Amino acid sequence: MKFTSVAGIGQGILVNEFYIVLTEGPDTFALTVTAGAGGSASDETGTSPYAESAVVDILATPDSSFNFVNWTTSDGGSFDSATTADTNYNMPANPAEVTANFAVIETEAVTSKGSKMIKIGML
Image (tube, rainbow, N blue to C red; front, side, top):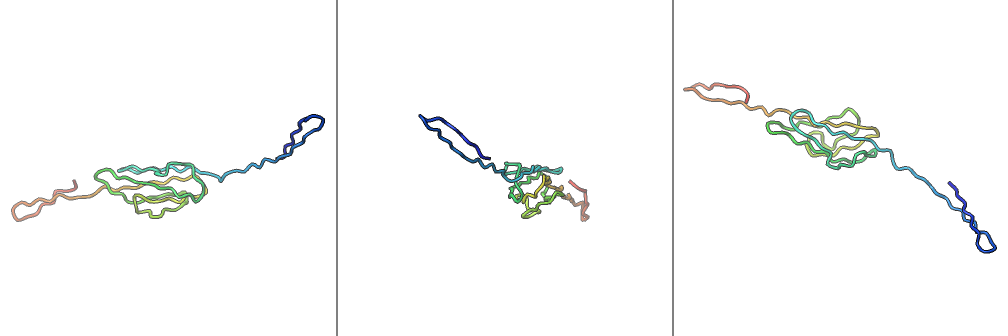
């Protein structure tokens, strides 16, 4: 944009012209971090919305009796390691949701009765 300013100085006129250039930043997109049953998940970078290709630190924390399984998304983008609880997500050029998935830690209790082992079941 061009602007002109005119001011009277004594017997003369001062004319100044100046330009203002407006620039837009990159488009940004919301990232939603969710967790399935058995844990919690967070955006450790914490500055959503993000530009395309931004690297976002995400963290999954399993509840007791659960293991972290993986990260999933259907919105594009990529994980540095989808099977690591503390990883980076590379933001796509659209809003995205990533989900931390967890599984129950399966254990079995076994006891013995005389010379026989008896399987009691899942704890």
